[in-house]
Length: 110
Image (cartoon, rainbow, N blue to C red; front, side, top):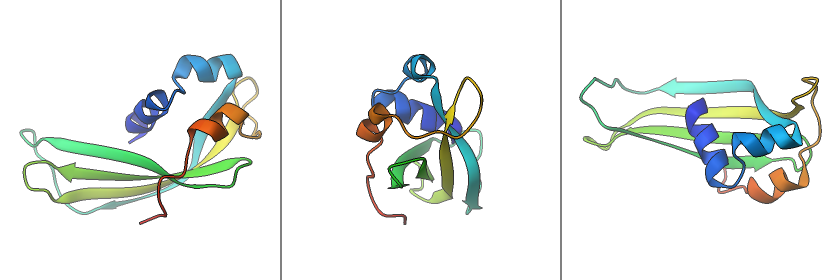
């Protein structure tokens, strides 16, 4: 799920290189994952993530869903809370303007 979050960040214009230049990153501080089914080696899976909450200051939340493409069944749902951190010292810090611009709330939590 975290790899998916990194891919999403890159897709909205916040690749790791940009985060390093800004010395800002998002650290997961709390998460909940509901495992609803099993996957096997031959299964094709689709994972998605989207932003569901942001306080516009320090925190944002992402929702995740993993679907078995062959059956259409949801195998897992996740909800992660993140806090913006200063990559130089590890302390929480305000979301930079670029993060606020790019991390748009896509929907309410499901």
